Structures are given as structure tokens and as C-alpha cells.
Image 1 (spheres, one colour):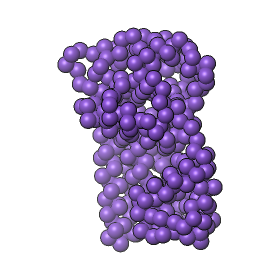
Image 2 (cartoon, rainbow, N blue to C red; image 1 turned 60 degrees about the vertical axis):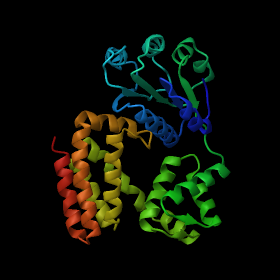
Image 3 (cartoon, rainbow, N blue to C red; image 1 turned 135 degrees about the horizontal axis):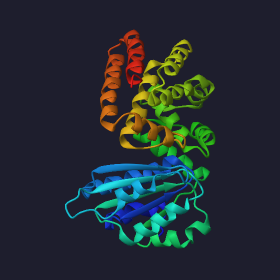
Image 4 (cartoon, rainbow, N blue to C red; image 1 turned 180 degrees about the horizontal axis):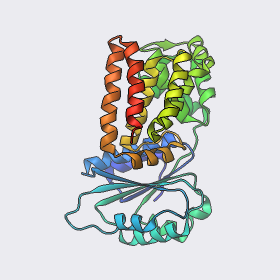
Length: 319
């Protein structure tokens, strides 16, 4: 079964399919579709999650098979998220798809995400075998008018608004990169809380390129590269970056790891490595540390927050 993104909510009201494949080049759109499916799955008692990342044919297919074979009658319901990070689907995986399509468990929800699929892939025997009882959701880039509407909806959720000129400027800046645009809007909501933005606000924000380097800190943090992370932190401090933006970016990155969401293509690999380094429960512990810093910011203890960030980077990278 093939549906478009707009039809998903109505589909989920009627049923939850055992398999969903979401394809497209815009990671954020895929994340949003996954969130809707997972919310519906949670209502159906799917609580546990497992993640598999396929970069090439060296993937451990036996491990994947062991986790997707028919479960016992008393097994817990679980969601398996499969990230396909290569445009060429390995032959071993296509065979696994055929097997799974014939013998999937009702206690398992398989969610697959990938880049755009070719027509040949969609017409292949293995794809049809897998999707016999599944739902395929191809995602396409937004046109300019739809992008503007998406920006307005995003800003409204964050208690922001803007005039038409500002909206056009943001839309032109964010074309073909919704993930970066979403980050822009979230940062704007921190810098201009509950404000109607004008074009001067947007231009000032865009001109300050150093603000976008705050996310350079998240990868070394997640990968345990303390020395590199400390150097980047010092650079951000020297550039006058608001500490609230740094703490926000770190807490957001940790939440993404815990929840299994990826807002950027390269983040998929980083998240996988982060979960290999530490368990989700350990990252939840670190999130509490970061939230304490957020509380210190609200209390006006900026100097202590910078020192706290240094200590946490060393602590998080100690393993």
C-alpha cells in the first residue's frame, strides 16, 4: 500500500500496519512521519525500541534476523527502526525482506527509513514481498508556498510570528534543507521569545554565522572526544556565543539520542556510535546534568554554567 504524507493521520486512525517504509531526502520530514507512527504504536502498547543501521553489506544480518523472527505469544511488543544509509540495498538485506514479509510477528512493528527509492527498487520482487502487508510513504521536497506554510506552523508552536517579508527571507534561506531551517526557528525562539519578527531580526540572525557553529560541539560530545569538545567550547566562548544556545543544543542532541530521532543525515551514524558508547539510560542521566545547567542559566549563574559545561564534557567523555 502506498500513501502520501497528508493521508497518514487518517490512515493511522483506522489501523496500524505491521511495516512502514518512509523514503525521502529530507530527514526532518521522515522524523515527523516516524513520530506520528510511534505515537500511534504507543497507544497499541508498543514500548520497546531497537535500532539497526545499514551502511553496507558488512551489516550483521544474522543479528537482525534474530531480533525480527517470530516471537513467543508472551513477548513484549517492540518497534524496530531500520536506518538504510546506502542507496544500493545489499542483496542479503533484500533476502531478509522477503523472509520478513512472509513471517513477520504481530508483536513487532518494523519502521524503515531510507533515501529516495528508484522506480526499479519499488517494482522489485523483494520490495513487493515486504510491502504486501506494509505501507510505503514516499516524501517529496516542499514547494515554496508549502514551505512558507510549514514555517508559520513551526513558529506558531514556539510562540513566534513574522511579517511576510521575513517569512519569504526564511523560506529562501531554508529551501532544500528543512532540518537546518527548523534549527534556525528554534534558535530564533530562544533569542526572540514571544516576538513578531521583522526582516531586520532575521538579517541580523543570518549575518552572525558564528551562531551556527554551536552545533559543532554536539558530535565530539556524543562521541566522547573531550579534548576536541573543550577546544570548541573555548572558541564558542571567545566568539561571544550565548551560553543558553550551547546548553540548548547539547540537551537537544542528547534527547535525540535517547528518542532515536535524527535531524541530519550525518547524525544517524553519530547517534549509532553514541548508543554503542553508552546506553540510553546513561544518556538520560547526562540529560539531567545538562538540565541542571539550564536551571543555573535561569538563575543568572552564567560563570558557573561555563565551568559546569567544561566539567560535564570531561565527565561525559571519560568512558
